[in-house]
Amino acid sequence: RRIEMYIDNDTLNAIIGANRDNALICIFTKLLWHTGARLVEVLDTVPMNISLSNNRIRINNRRKRTREHEYYREIDIPQDLIEELTIFIKNNKIKKDEKIFKFTPKTAINYIHIACNNAGLEEKITPKMFRYSFAQNRIMMGVDDFELSYLLGNTDIKKTILYRNLILGKHIA
Image (cartoon, rainbow, N blue to C red; front, side):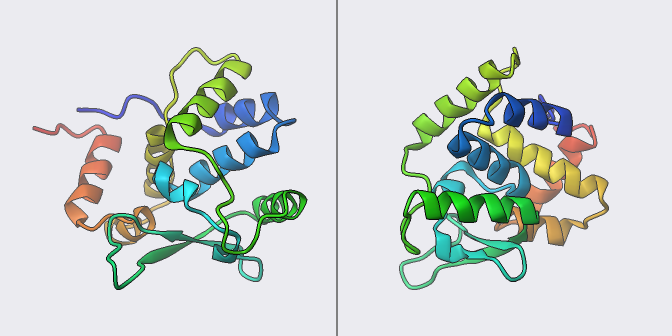
């Protein structure tokens, strides 16, 4: 198996540029890119999980959640994205415990496809590709497997090692 497509900065900027009049699509796309979160984790984002003081976002980890405990990871995001989120939340009067994105995963996938079509991209880009790209960027930055596992919210280090091997093009049986 191999990862089919890496979303580079130029592709991301093309998507954002072609959709700059749609703050919802831009912010959603940037969160996927900058957090490596699963689609449903981004959809679960609420304003109280955004830290303005240290440019971090708390991602509730769907894989580790139990009835008794919420597990989360904190991920650094750029200051300009924090500012965009803050403005979007204020303009849309989103309460601190209310979901920022009020649509289903299927609608989110459709939004990504529309955004890519607007950018003139022929490739079929999926939310999972943003996650792979996040992982690849971190690997290229020298992040070790344990840190990457935390950032991705993986419960098993073997999954993270699989990502690394796929990204580095190593043969997977």
